[in-house]
Amino acid sequence: MDRARLLRAAGLVTGILAAVSLIIGRSPGIGPALSVAALVTLLAVGLVAADRTVARPAATGVRTARLTRRRLVDVVPLGPTTGVVVLVVALTGLLSVTSAASTPHLHSDTTPPNPDDGRHFGCLSGGMAQSGPWPGWFYAIPVLTTVAVAIVVAVVALRGVLARPVVESATLSGDSYRRGTASAIVAALGVVVTVPLAGAAYFAYSVLGQPLVCDQPVAQGTRPWLVALVIMAATAGAYYAARLVFPPAAAASPLAAVVSVR
Amino acid sequence: MSGDPLIMIDPSQLVPPYVQIRDQIADLVGAGELAEGTRLPAVRQLAADLGLATGTVARAYQELEASGHVTTRRGGGTRVAAQPGAASRRRAVIVEQHAREYVESVRRLGVTPDEALEAVRTAFGNL
Image 1 (cartoon, rainbow over the protein chains, first blue to last red):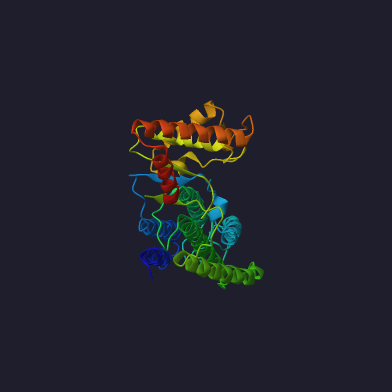
Image 2 (tube, rainbow over the protein chains, first blue to last red):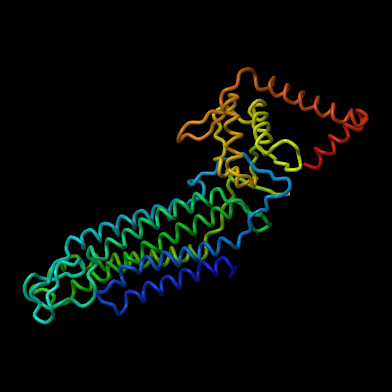
């Protein structure tokens, strides 16, 4: 594995480990709300470190450049990017519903009452306190804010990649660098979205399945859909993780803008 | 490899980089190598590719706009403007002008026409 792949893989693994460690064992604390931010940070560190392994041409001597305008649509992979958009819509939709469904739990039989703090789901009277966090607005706001920030950062990074010159070699052209890096950025964004989507769907499924949260089970019909969402998000997450570490080889493009330095 | 026109910056020349960019693009536009409506690279992209400050490329684009070679619209980038006259005639004029400049330079050095032509052939062969 080359150094750039190793660094992206390191960012991915440490990011997921950090996110999971913030979720596990802190139910229902602030940890899950910060997990996506930790994931984004470590993925970004991995991507930036990997990018630094590609040398920039020295600004000395005679330089040439092609008068070709490079566009985002020429380097960003269409399918994976569309997938990220769909996943963002799914995450926003799920968290909107779970935020609206979060309730106070004022008359638990066994635990002190909880106000409508955006991280509980239960009944206004009776039942037991839930086990595990409910993905209400307490988590939805920081998670969606972090995802929005990650999207903005990704767009800025993609625009930077477009303008970035590289020292070309037999194995690396400017075009292949830009396509590979753009693919890795989109894949990182895919991981950023799929992790909270899988987590939110799983915890919603889990809380709804706890028998004594309400006197009567509620919204049981949504549980199979939540399972499907967990599986879909996990599969998509694995796909994007693989693309992040192993971006597909760039196809030759007639729009390639090659910079050479003599 | 793309067939799009190349421009070259030589820091050893006495001519400032923005003038080198301006003159080369003006020649390409005048000779019809860059067709009307062709969108030029973003200032940031061309500056990064050539290892120059963005202000250098921006100044070249501004002067090209002032001379009527390109037009710039907000959100539409910088595009090659329509040029009067046939492209082939403009191209011939530009080539003749460069040839005259070359001949004047080498004549000062006492170079014969055969030597000058051989140097041109060699330079083409080295491209």
